[in-house]
Length: 282
Image (cartoon, rainbow, N blue to C red; front, side):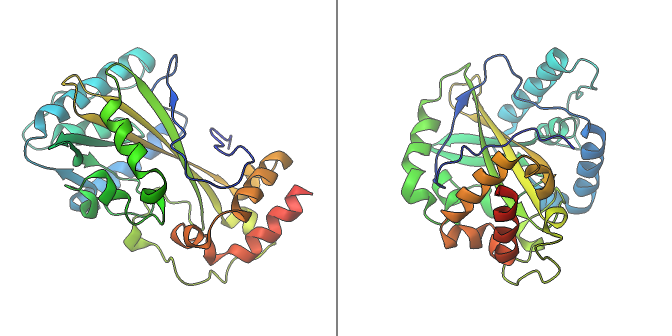
């Protein structure tokens, strides 16, 4: 499988917003996994609807605009893809929109000068639970990430306040996980016990490099923001098939605080991982 994004530059690990403007590129990314990803979304929505959907009172108008944005973006950039139809009484607009794209969709509404997670359809979470985040402001949403609020919490708040209408930006998160599933809520993952099935010989095919491409854009009311999350997964072997990528990944992990390794569950296979990356970097 090709590697769509590799958001590491070879420098020490650090918290950074890493924002860049989207100019001639879509804020949606449709690829060869489109059909299988949407089938997985449908399965998750059928089985876990209450855990992966949130819709607070007062969010319906903004949800409707998100649905229209998704429809317009698909028609413009992916004209062969089915577009979502107008909502009916059975499902809220943000879910209808999310059923047609590989991205998860999150509405952040400005309420009393704070951005609140007001509505979302998050079928592919990476170690968090939507119902624990719904209705909370940015700082509270990011609180479980060690040191993040202390390092860049205020800049994140300022960015949300100052994002100009019509501007779209993207950023990336990444992690390493011993499961390739798209659906990885916190309650489904073992974050404490070592994975004894992984060693330096098989880790290349049993650990996965998981990238989140996130995009942000302000809605037409000049206040609310659409936040999207798209997951890309490759085996560690695919990522390190180029020596330069193995070297950059090794450097980031060598300089990553232990608290972050624990938060990202990397501590479950840290020793064989470092041995594998050192060999791949030489």
